[in-house]
Image 1: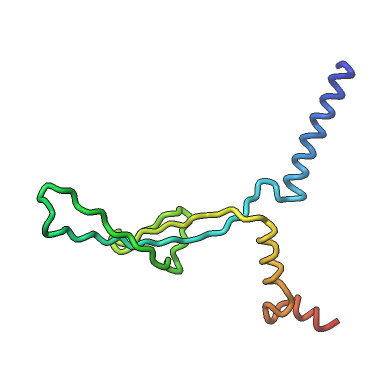
Image 2: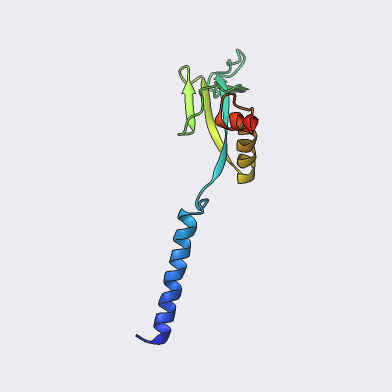
Length: 125
């Protein structure tokens, strides 16, 4: 093989090795942090006016936003209840990793969870 071919092969192998190293050891590659928000709406049919023409179209149903049930979180994203009277979905919004890490750090502070090893070792030293 030529010297130039060997150099380019070495650079290619080094590049692939760096990508594999970044993806496996240091983590974070290909991760997305999301926040779920469940929305729910109640659909009620509108009453037809007694003065409406017989061949006129029906009025659109009334849609009112209601609080989502606590167990409404669904990975598929869409859910219905009570014979289709309530429809809802879960929207996923991407958040910065910093927000997730700060929330985890706040939850892991000593004393936040009673009886954990972190809180016992902090008081014993």
